[in-house]
Every structure is written in C-alpha cells, then in structure tokens.
Image: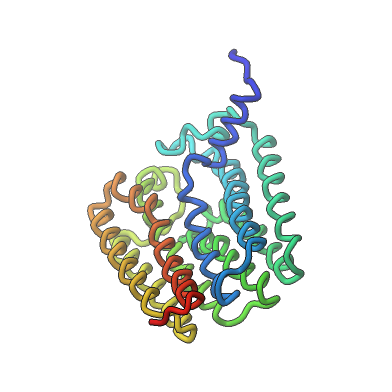
Length: 296
C-alpha cells in the first residue's frame, strides 16, 4: 500500500474542498459583495471586504466537507462524484468532519471581528449549511435549502455594516434564492439519471419536463426582484447596462440547457458566477462613478 505523504494528504484536502473548482464559492461571493456595497452605500472598507471574501471561501469549503460525508454512500453511484476523496475512502469521515470544523471555526473567527448582529446571524447560517446535505432525502426541492444557506451572506453583510437587517436585505435575499434555484437546478440536471436510480430528491427531478422553462423563470425573477429592491438607490445607467448583459447571459444559459445534455447543463452551472459578477459590477461601478462625480 503506497504511503501517504503530507504533500499528498494536502492535495486530498484541496480536492475535498473543490479548490480547483472556484465556481461554487464565486456564486456565493458576488451577491454577498453586492449586499456589502448596498449596505455601506459604496465601498465597505478593506476589513469587511477581507472578512467576507475569506469567510465565503472558508464556509463553502467547510460545506463541501459536510456534504461529501453526508453523500458518501450515494456519490459512489454517480459518475461525476464517484472519485471524491471521502467516497473512495482516501479521506476518512472523521478526518473530513474535523477539517470542515476547523474551516468553519476560522470563518467564525473572522465574523468575531465584526459586530454582535453579524455574529448572531452567523449561527443559523452554519446550522442551515450543515442541514442542507440531509434534505436531499426528504425535500422535493432541496435546492431551496441550499439557497437559504447561501443567502445568509447577504443577511450577515447588512448586519455587519448596519447592525441590523433592513427590508431591502430580505428582498435581495428572496431574489437571490431564485438565482440559486436556477443554477443548482442546472447542476442537478447533470446527475438526473443517477439521482433517479438512487432515489435522491432534486429540483431537476421534481420539475420534470418543466425544468428548462422553470430555470429561465427563476433567472428572470432574480433579476426582477433585485431591480425593484434597489430602485430607490438610484444606481445609474451602468447598473442597467449590467442587467442587460445579465439578461443576455440568461439567453445563453437557455441555449446551453435546452437539449438537457450533461455537458451543456454542467457548463451552464460552471459559468454562472459570471452572471453574479456582472450584477455586482453594475452595483460597484455605479458607486464608483458617483464617488468620481460622474452622474448618469
């Protein structure tokens, strides 16, 4: 049996937390940064920016550890996930959970540098993140639970800046929930055949032949709710230019998933972070132009 060197063990840990697949934490990061900018009425400062960027990466990584432990008996029957470290036994269950706990504690340490409101909201955020992997057994659309977990970044961002969570945060939270439903249903479409065989519940299975139409509606609801929620912030023309680009990406996603091919659906998921980045660019760009004294 080949020996496991510290270097190869570290490589396994990087594989466990999907270090080479940043799309998973980027889709969490962009709405969180958008919320930070809105809450702070512009650039939130380097401290909060570092806290939320690193915290997002750490919590997504911790979530991967818990998810892979919870799904280890299912993942072995799914082509895309059969070689994950916990599934193959390369990383033990206790080891993966210990790594996840360390990463979550590091993220919590970052939150401790903010304020009481942000600390308080971080507790349910962790609990929902832990619960999500197990909802695939009992909830027809567990992607909604994932959306709740991912959306806590918005809530905690407002809490960290303002000490409370105003109505606009919850509207952004609701809109972003539809974005998560859109991209994670695309993700679920990749594994639909395998999930049906092993009796895993996903939105792709629940929606059936309505999956493609539903995803497009989810995208449109996300963008529409954010437009309405942020209407009073007079973000300017650049925000609406960004929304136009985002709508073009929605059309692109439709072309990728309309035939329901594994390759097309997986690509649609992997490039989703560009849509979030586009919306954030519109928000941050609007504040930058305002700071520079440029109107319109």
